[in-house]
Amino acid sequence: MTEAVSICDVAAVEALRRRLGLDPEVIRRLRNRLFKRFLPDSAALDGFPDPQQLVLHSLSLHQRFDSATDGATKLLFRTAAGMLMESVILRILTGRTTLCVSSQIGCAAACDFCATGRMGIAQNLTAAEILDQIVQAGQIAAAEGRRLNNIVFMGMGEPFHNEPVIHEVLHQLTDPKLFARSAAGILVSTVGIPDAMLRCVEAFPDVNLALSLHSVNPQVRRQIIPVAVKYPLEELRRTVLQINQLQQRTVMIEYLMLAGLNDSMSDADDLVKWLDGLRVHINLIPFNPVSDAPHLQGSSRDAIDRFADCVKSHGLKTTVRYSLGSDIDAACGQ
Image (cartoon, rainbow, N blue to C red; front, side, top):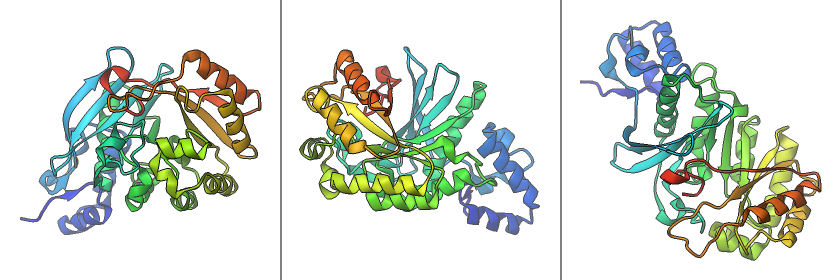
């Protein structure tokens, strides 16, 4: 018997269509139902002559955790190899819905403040496994009468350590014949890998980029982001400037607020100087406690507000981002 093919494998699906002698409209209709409307599997497959030839899902939903305090849902998935990874649905009070997806199981960046970084790297996810996070979360949202407005690569893993797969995923997400997502609603977050950032912008000029900066003090940044040893701050700044020249979009700067490490007024002044002349939007992120990092403490609300006021006073767009899902270990960094 011929092995079933993944719905996310474009070439294999086309070969299957030819083998079964199907009208292209049959595949187009199936993709529209699953990738764009996020209909249940049975509805998506309605009219397809041999459903056993197709694999709609590369992941199985192992467990679901719904926050009791806000609109977050953590989806714990199991891969075919038996490994666990997660995505988070964020239901914003405005009615918008964001999905935070993972690109790897574990992460080699080893950021001090991040639970995933302490796992080490276990495995790169495939394009089908990343896309299936979106399909299954989209089906959950659609069943609630919601739609996925934004997809952010802020889950487990450093996206650009899985660069070829991320490019394939971005291609499928923005392809009008596949997911048909607006690039403006997609954001890729990175600890800062200059060449990969530039390649992403060149290939997908309308996709948003976020740089996990967290400090412009080289010693402090190396302490909390060990991979920063490879990429000096001067090189990162030049990269952001180049990105500003290549695309019209604003680069998001992520800055985790850590008491006594990067939250002083002097730190704020240094950040303002580093960002001078760059087109950016600063996201100040309160620290969500991680059991493996008891030595790190989040900044107080007053310290965050003072820091925000300082950078805003220099004309820099700044938002304080309060994470959802802390009660189910689904908040940023957990």
